[in-house]
Image 1 (tube, rainbow, N blue to C red):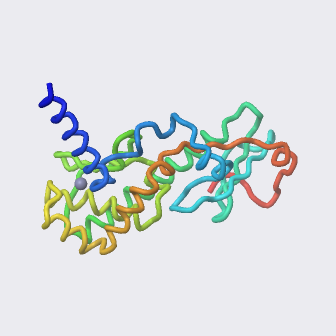
Image 2 (image 1 turned 45 degrees about the horizontal axis):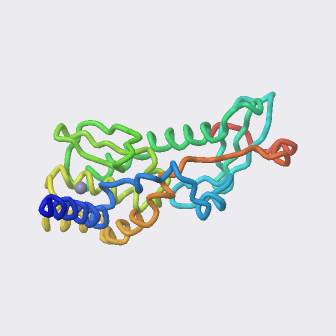
Length: 222
Ligand SMILES: [Zn+2]
């Protein structure tokens, strides 16, 4: 009995340590997204995390316009045709589309610099992984990576591509990573500290004020 218990606690300790040492393997803590964290949910109200910054989102009721999202570099403008439309789903789709555009491009560029060849880039929404690399040389990413600062996005891409040379996390592997991402330790720390925020779902509401003020200068699309 005592032995079994100590083995269990050893495994727990090992996993805790691994979580600290390998933040890119594990996503957020399991409860993230299901419990309400008043500290983080309050300030992110009608904010969108994108490229590591929190941007304001304005939701408009515009029955005569096509539904869509326009990002002007400062503000996410979300156009809804009726009050039943879901602004959070529209912005989430916008982030997925952006990830589908940016991550394959980054992978192509870094693979050329590192000198490796891969098969396919696949976007997923895994709960436990930000990125992974398969034996068939497929690189998998969570679309949520697009919410991270660009340097951290690059680090995750480099991390996976370097596995095409070393399928482990040995000293040689990290030396290779450091060649292309010299500040990788900082990026790993960022991941560790912000994984819950990155994992958090977009939560937008339509306010009476927003629905009254219909902008004329911006149009959906982008
Ligand atoms: Zn790895």
